[in-house]
Length: 489
Image 1 (cartoon, rainbow, N blue to C red):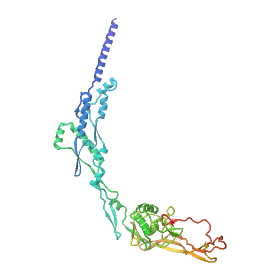
Image 2 (tube, one colour):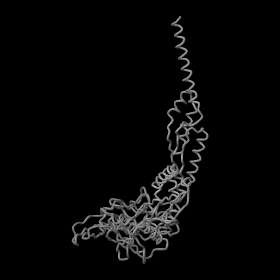
Image 3 (tube, rainbow, N blue to C red):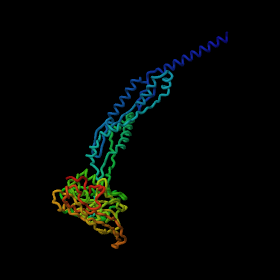
Image 4 (cartoon, one colour):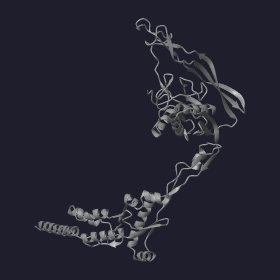
């Protein structure tokens, strides 16, 4: 009996103790106030009811976001607030932890209250889009201007001079944003220190000097000098005498397109791309083109005078020719074997800059002349001459066509034929004026153009007219040269 009585007493004591502990935990976990000693940025909210504490924090955030700030850019001053600058004071991390005091099981609430941190700091976020609305790109451009590239100038005497670039200021938004976050956080700390507030009030509003950086243009004096374009290497000129208005326009369009082009060391010039650019930018006009070995109406006539003039300048500079072909007809503006034709999709003119430095193409149409000059850097004692030799003249064949209107036994010459030529061209290298090598550039064939004679058909007109031997078989593909469209009759 005594032992049973003792066990009953012990059980009662344990039950009583547990009831007391549970009651204490229940009372502790069920409090509707913030734990004592809690503060956020110096604002004491300990032992306050939850709603009251949240209201005080929101009031502090609102007050801080509306604080006046002066932003200066050189001599320009703008009055603003932290909120207008994109500053956002955030207490969500504190609110999330505060919610844990009132949610979950009894044990979870008690544990959260027991471990609840005492000092808290607001987070500072920055809305960069909102900040950048303070000074728009249009404002920056009107205030600071736009950068201007350095310019290389070439005088009439072929002397190279330079105009320096113009750099301008721009707002360093990354540094400015970091500054705003730092200063707004500092202002938040000062808000909780009475002495600091007094000092700040005496000194006036916070002033933020906007950081700037220098925006340089892509082309600078340094970058131009690094290209190594030191002097004129060579030039070549062809005449435009007898060219119609459309042909002159086409030549000028292609010449303007290559004018100012700079080829990097090892870069290949592509005339097909030049023609595409000229056509898109300036358009081509009606002018005679070459089709089937004859001049016919078309569009773009004259563009090969630019490629041929450039070709002669290139070979006089000693550069490597990648692709080039002669016309099917000799042209008047350069010697046979020294022309460079173009047929879109079939024949191109390409050369490679092998000088080891940048190469500048300068092209002008003036006083009935097209002049192409090449500027760069090459040894001054090395020069090149060109020699063109006609090794064979091919007689013009005769072609007969039937003309029923002619009397029997008579004939009529319709087209006067032209002989063809086989031409070999050589480049002669000289050092200090003395020839040191001679290299064949090309062996070109200019097909002869037949003399066309009309004759009366024999008998009933069903007998085929005689033609030049070798004219039977598949006709060669006719290419449009020296133009972009045609023939157009």
